[in-house]
Structure formats: structure tokens, C-alpha cells
Image 1 (cartoon, rainbow, N blue to C red):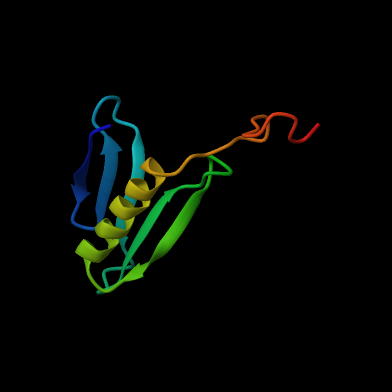
Image 2: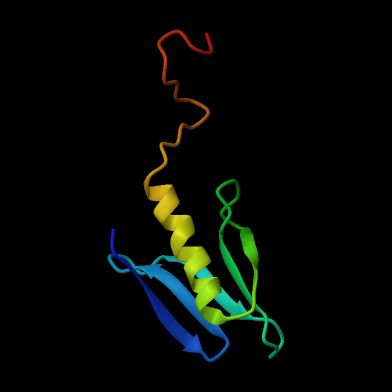
Length: 90
């Protein structure tokens, strides 16, 4: 899946999927300071965001979002209704 950054304004950069435009990350400036934040949609609740951290430069905040999705790409996720082993959970 191809992803890229889009500049909204000097204080907001959005990470999105190229195929459908879905926003999957956000790097933002805290009140015109030198501090930048990074967040992604919460895996538990789509209406909330998960803060990845506060960074001293925009590039570090962007890298945190990119690394989050790189790791998610390499991680097998199992939902509450799926089981890896036969008979597990019964």
C-alpha cells in the first residue's frame, strides 16, 4: 500500500493512503512552538487518536508515524473472533 505526506498548512501534515485518500497519520505543531506531535487513528476506537509522542522537529514526528505503519505492515493481527490454533477459545 502506497502512502505519502500532504501539507495542509505550516503546522499540519497528514499521512494518507494514496489509493483512497484515507488519513492514517498526523504530524502537528503544538501552539507555534518548537514541539511537534505525532498521532495515528486508535486501533481500538476509530473516533479517537493515539498519540505517538512529542518531538523537537517535524521530521522526527513524521518518522514516528511512518515507523508505526511500517511495523503494522509486518504484524499479524487477530481479532476477538479469530483464533490461530484449532480449538482455541472453545
